[in-house]
Length: 358
Image 1 (cartoon, one colour):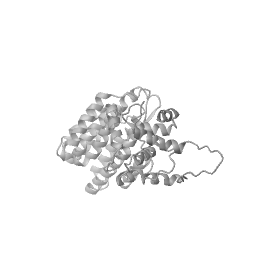
Image 2 (cartoon, rainbow, N blue to C red):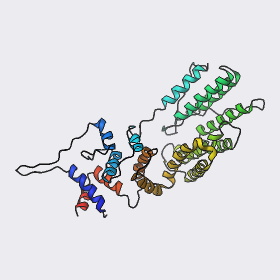
Image 3 (cartoon, one colour):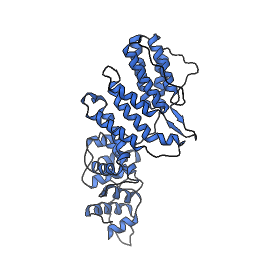
Image 4 (tube, rainbow, N blue to C red):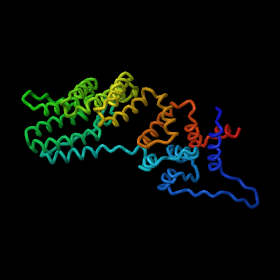
């Protein structure tokens, strides 16, 4: 593999700071580097203060060092994103559940013996998070809205709560699907129930049915959920594309259903292009990046390398870094010097150093 002169220069800097220095007798002067405390390392690198480049640095920090050496410092937006902490913090789904249980209590729902579990178990005793925080947050806001309009303890709120208990029971078991509301119910309440039915199918793993129902909601101009319908149709296809084979195999087969992911891609592109769906556009863009990471892995790896090597507004900086390194395990751009440099430093790769010296 041939390295460009720029790559050799960057590797040379790292080689100098990573390689112990040997001295014969006599007086020598050398540059002294001070290593920042760990808590200040991230902020120092963000400001372009390299210090000693160490192989123990996380890969995202080595990416920042590369950008500094390449005279492409982080923008203010990228600095802010980097300083938010770990790129992949632990997921705490209990937070959403607690919010939902509190809102349910405030609405006067029965408490005795009630609990909700977000995880579902496969036949081989493997678990996955079936109901995410946003599901509980959305339910909490909906219950609050209905309680304010119809009153706590009203028949409308009690009926919605009873149906929602079934929906969230589906997070961990096969609890069933709420019944449709009759024609005597208001159009608004019937729309809320159609959403609950689609959500129940989603958590039960009936992804095609859920996608069709959410899509219908997205095309219903009168539905209070219209702006979210197509986005949730895409999420149904994404869940099918990423989890259906794994669930069917009991957690053994991690393959992808690419046909389902392509359907999600098509739907998300439609959401992004629709001016009337501006509220969900950012979410659609994030989901589309998730899908493209799997459907067009090589293309996306090349795009991410190019995006991260130049300044940006920082909005997608953190997620792009996560996706970049996740993809680089198997895919990379044909001329991606950045990841070559990062891996040479990370691995203290003597072979790369030998190629540099030649």
